[in-house]
Length: 543
Image 1 (cartoon, rainbow, N blue to C red):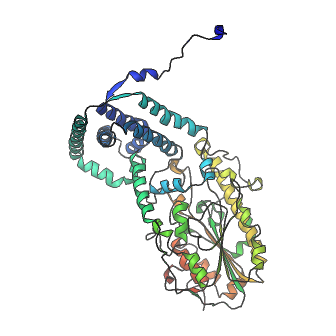
Image 2 (cartoon, rainbow, N blue to C red):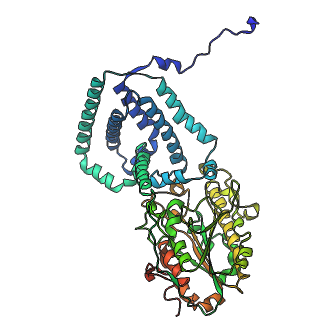
Image 3 (cartoon, rainbow, N blue to C red):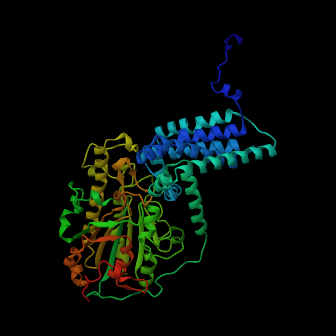
């Protein structure tokens, strides 16, 4: 059967690279230049937009090249060069893709979101474009680099070359920065956030900061708060209390018709309009769930909150439980960032994704059987992107056409806003159904409902999508969140709570900092950790 054998050879186009030989210091310089040119167009675009000077940008290129070359001299040795080269290329490619498509900034908070994301969230971001980009900017450069034959000198001469690279680099950097010190200092002082776009500096810095935070999170003794917490009833009846706190996900205040948005995104709640209070100016503790969720329940305000200590420091749930409330957490998302680990917890969704109506199922039946003062937290999946179209059923598709892909940059502005507004409409449907169910329990409980989102979302404003931007530069779309209260006239009467007084506060500026103390106040929990200055209900309850 030898006649079936085809006698030809397909040449590997990369095989010629085996002939390319570089001395180690040449390879380092090549790699530094490759990193600067291939992975940093976004960074230089931002620099140019801020400081459109050919001379300034050119000198910055020279300085960054020198610094990257110096870093290669430190990191790249005979047995580490190829491994580190490939590793950095692959990470650069992944980070560059999401920076380019969603215009996100990469810092320790973004890294925290990456590390804490679940399988469903990760899969929602995967598509053919990711694979193509990863191949072109990650795998292909890695293969080319691996094909280069690096020539090394003796260890002593290698060290000499590296010292020379450092000497030349330092002299070059000092000379250039010194000559334009005034402009450089002004640029760095006024444009600190630009560093979040410089690869690989941004994620290396993020890894260092994240590692320090995780070290501080290592097992510690539980920090207790509110140890003197006691329930001091001030209401006018002997019914049990039921406080329901719905934690929204990725809902931004700007798209709530209750806050003046022109579209009727909250129309399902119209029937309860007279009993609803929507606060118009509420800011979040962070721009991601990893920060905002534990901060919402923390005694510490945004300025004092430390993510690294939240896992071993008690929170509002612990204080409410200690005061006599039965605390129950129900989630439609994976995990609660550690804050519900000491109370009864129920994670409901057993498949890839579930609609938020799952939070209402079986809720009333369980509450009818209880005979305790209840504090129930319902954690929604809400408007979590970029797959907004998967967050609501067909019945909630009010606005069209819709963006039916996770690649938001492929959709028009109208399609993105439409699909996002549908998620808000669906949230309104669920809240309306929940209120209808809670009304059925008023014969047994004093019922109060609070809805607050953890953070907002960017929908393409200034070419920014999603959330998790560094708070210092985050647009208000990511930090302004809805806060809605519902309680009946009977509740107001029994708690001596003035609806008119609260209505006068709807335009006031509030934040997640107010949640801990306001809920303690309305729930009748007295503790030395309570701060009446942060209690929204203070002065609206007539004792």
